[in-house]
Every structure is written in C-alpha cells, then in structure tokens.
Amino acid sequence: MTTSQKHSGQCQCGAAKFEASGAPKFVSYCHCNSCRRATGAIFSTWVGFESENTKWINEPKFYASSTGVKRGYCDKCGTPLSYEGAKWAGELHLLIGVFEKPENFKPTAEAFREEALPWAHERPAKS
Image (cartoon, rainbow, N blue to C red; front, top):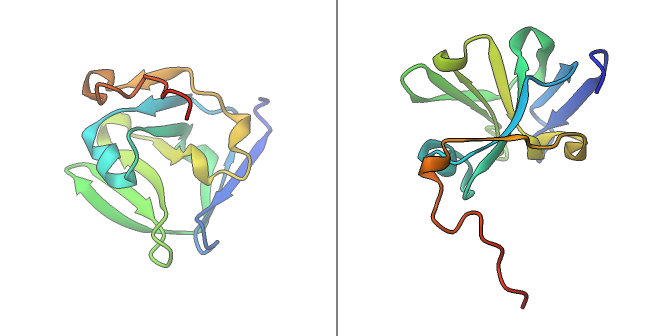
C-alpha cells in the first residue's frame, strides 16, 4: 500500500461513510469482551489509521462504551463502524468489513488474545 492510497467505506445502508488515506498503522484481530459485545462477533478485525488521515463523509452516531472510549455506528441500519479511545489517542480504528475493499488489508497481529474464546482459533470440521 502506498501512502497516497485512498480507502473508502460505509455502513450497510450507506448513511455513514468515511475515507482513509495512506497505509494503516496496523490491521489486527481483537479478542476483548468489549469488542465481542459491540459487534456480536467472536472477535473483531480492526484497521487503524492516524486520525489526521481519516475523514467522515457522513458522520455516524457515537456511543461512549466505557470511560475514554467512543464507538461509531449507523443510527439508521445499526452497523458498527469505528473505535476511538484514550489508550490510542490520535487514531481511528475502523472495522475491516465496512471497507469497500477489505481484501486490501491483511491482519498481522492479535490484541487481547488472553480474552479469546477457547475455541476461537480452531477450524471446524467439514460438514
């Protein structure tokens, strides 16, 4: 990825849209309980950018999920979109599935692996 590259994304209904530019700081799975509850998934995959390299075209609503944390979501269709927290000030983390081309990003790390569900890394038997 080049630093001049633009990445766009949106919620399911298209009411909340964003653009990010350049290479992400990271692409990581997150196993924390908070992300599981916010997304309904066994883990989340986040693409992190410097806040200055992102902009909301149509801004979502935000929910303060815990002290120093706000999560963006579409108030029309309910799609979870983003995470911003004091722990990673100056960054905007976007869920990989809301990008127009999520295949452009490959996870290279895992956060809070100690909170992973015990079977999260097992491959199911073929049915």
